[in-house]
Image (tube, rainbow, N blue to C red; front, side, top):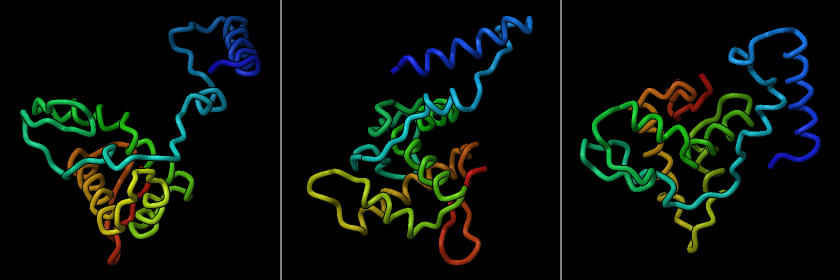
Length: 156
């Protein structure tokens, strides 16, 4: 929603660009403006996570509501705007750019509002499927590695 404060900030930045004579096609909004348009997801449903970590061409991907055509870029772009992926990015950024699987699973369990609440082992499976998909698609924003025993999720 664009309120008066946001409108003033947008107008101020636009006016500065016009005064500088910069072309508006190469203009980028400041971080303070773009952060206001970044969704912050705090609650999730279990159906917003992948049922498995890998999909075959022609298969229906329920949590993305899409039939996978076999094009990796199609799946990557759809995952990038999924609720689960946006939530994951938000949580990892909040934890200074990295978090381990156990803590992440706990945060996911607390964020799920599905009734009845899934068991912790099921939450871990939901998270494992999401992370497996992120690795398989080589997502540019989030990385997953295993420095010791536990998986680490980090911002690239």
